[in-house]
Length: 90
Image (cartoon, one colour):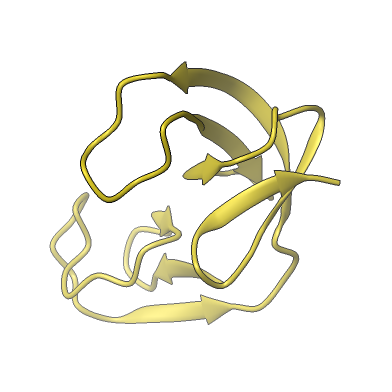
C-alpha cells in the first residue's frame, strides 16, 4: 500500500505520523499493485546478526513511488513486494 499526503501529494510506502516534506498529518491510502520496476540493487554479503548470510537491497519504482525492499533472490526487471516487506522477481 502507498500512502499519499493530502496536503503536498508526497508518496511513501511506509505509514508515517507526519509527512517528511510538509509536516501534515493526513494521508490517503492508495490501493494498488505491489509490483514495480527495479531501478537498482546491491548485494550485501556482510549482514546484521539474525539476517540471511547474503541478500539484495533493491530500489524499485511502484507507480512513481520509490520503495526499498530486501530480496533473497537475484532481482530482475519487475519485482513484487510481499506484505512482510521482502520482494522477489516476477
